[in-house]
Image (cartoon, rainbow, N blue to C red):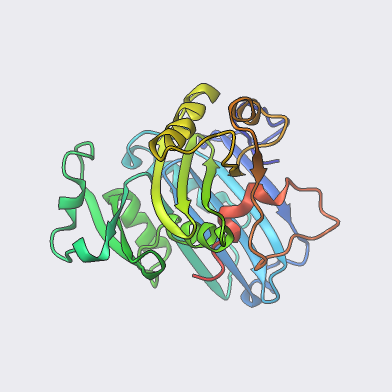
Length: 298
């Protein structure tokens, strides 16, 4: 099963990558059928996650590897990531399509009227630790803004090797689009997505983006602090504005209990309907895979 923060995974294979899960591997997914399927993968600074689906949207595989060195510069774990991909059951098949996305905390949203195509590093002045970065951007017309990325050079180079036909795309973009679509006419939306010990927090006023940021946390108390900080920053009441959660969190987890003590209504997110899990398969609730399920449209 997928490793959840605060939980232990019994009998999970242990590697240099620390925690591995193969949540789903349908017997229909083989070297012969893979050309009729697509792989969606997120190369993150804390994990690699993968979803394989056939042309009708049936999910045939879900696999996740969490890095033992999460939080370290990517150059220090790149070798282990490459080795992991060589061993990954889902990765090595001859898919008809491979779609790659990046995940890391070094992003910023720039309003269209302020965006300049020149030196993108200016948007991260004094915000990044020393190192070599590869800068890119993605237009988000729904928000009248640009998402600017500063990807560690080693992570960007590996992404280019794995997905040579793909421009740099960050997981934040499809996630933001999905949250906006689900927001509808709600006065405020507060959304939390967890990727192991990384938290993505989004705040919308109706469908207008007020806030997006990523935080690394260690304890449930840390996570609670960042969530309540978002409420406080926009003068929202945890008694009135619900919190929608997705990713590595279950109802009986320490993280959920901590949030529920201070937020009156904690909801589990509903994924988009692009992909369908086999009904007879015992996997985690669909909100645990929401960020992967958001990738279909891109």
